[in-house]
Length: 136
Ligand code: ATP
Image 1 (spheres, rainbow, N blue to C red):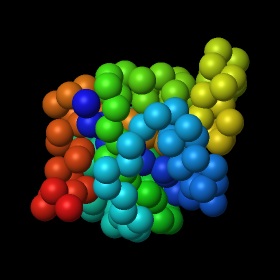
Image 2 (spheres, helix red, strand yellow; image 1 turned 180 degrees about the vertical axis):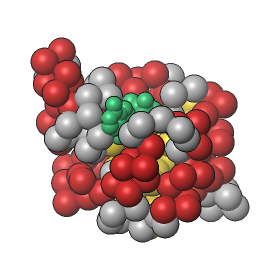
Image 3 (cartoon, rainbow, N blue to C red; image 1 turned 90 degrees about the vertical axis):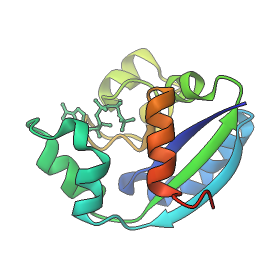
Image 4 (cartoon, rainbow, N blue to C red; image 1 turned 180 degrees about the horizontal axis):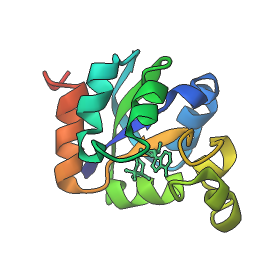
């Protein structure tokens, strides 16, 4: 099985029970789960690849605005399948093209899009280590 890192972002934390049910209904095993409130420094580190982009400061402030839930999900082909269930980055676009996706249902706009998923095997390894450094 393949592992991926999922996040319920601050804008969707009140919907986390429904999102967790969605995850389990789609056959993912939740291997690790942690609720935390990231500092702006941790957010900058996590999203370092976006440093310098116009939306970076507001992304950091959004992601540090409240608690999140970080999870390690396991399933065959989980990286691609979880990305698929998220829908497009923009919640507006998600509602147009992937109305069943999590971002269509729980997202608000281009930034407040409810959920995150690793985009590659390398990315998943890095992100899992970021939130679960001891493998715990
Ligand atoms: P994620 O990495 O969170 O799963 P993604 O891969 O779909 O999302 P990225 O391009 O990696 O999207 O952007 C990371 C996050 O930055 C997005 O999920 C969103 O919250 C925010 N973001 C991306 N593009 C924009 C934008 N144009 N305006 C505002 N926020 C944005």
